[in-house]
Length: 248
Image 1 (spheres, one colour):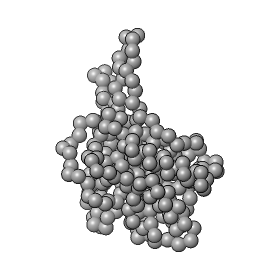
Image 2: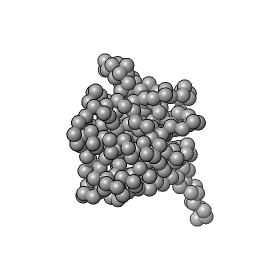
Image 3: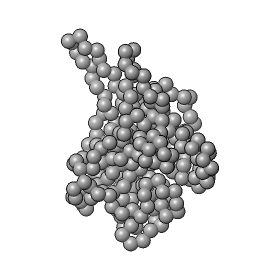
Image 4: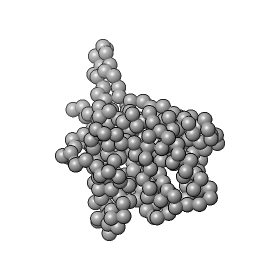
């Protein structure tokens, strides 16, 4: 998981390794996420769905490594917003979620139905079809990059707080100011805020299709260990396109 104490602001192909020439060494295949056109965004991050620290209480299928991935065009815009915040206010961005495999979205829906939380589906907090599956959407917050450890700013609620108080404009004072700083920075670089969630920004452009490749898993060699359940590259049938606007 990316530490908050390092200076950040670039992206790398998501562990996309070149073939090793000579020496009798076998080529190392790129992970499925890199082959799908996703890149890792080099920002502070705390990818909650790769851990138990999320509303389901367990890591979600497909989050095999805690890496924030986006399509390259979305990654460029996100890093531009981060750089502008640093220049103008000494702030930066910290990512909670970015690209999300379709299998993880389906697991969220099953959790809501199984635990009696269908209200979260009906209320727009958990999406049956999420734009996160396109690799163009990010959940994030502001951090103070001038201070050690890059502490998070007060945004009024925690990430994934399924409450009306999470609505971007449902705040006052310092909290509203911080949310608007984030909103202006992101909208200035082509992202749209989901009004019910101050942390949710979408940069969807025509063309992307939902993806269901696990995060950070290379194709398995015959002698290698079997990947854990939810981290295998075989995907279920492709779902319909996402809805126009979606929450978590």
